[in-house]
Image (cartoon, rainbow, N blue to C red; front, side):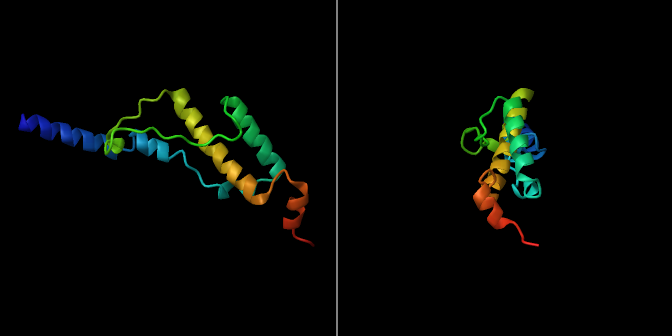
Length: 119
């Protein structure tokens, strides 16, 4: 019995370490909004809206996280379907785009002009 528990514990530890766990993959859905700051506002708004429409998500989508049993998150295998993983990844991208849009006041012409450099 003790041998079985040791084998089970090592398998669980290995499963969590390879990056295939649900929590590791969900953490990867969080993206930096800085990558979108160089994209022109109108293009970024169109890109966000297109991504939301493609995955049937609202333009205000945010990444979601499952709530595995306490302490087992790194050891739970990711059993979501490919479609669900793609949708969750898109939610992370939309959220990052929205943070860039909000920071730069995209879609608000009066405020956007204040940020422009005069030349």
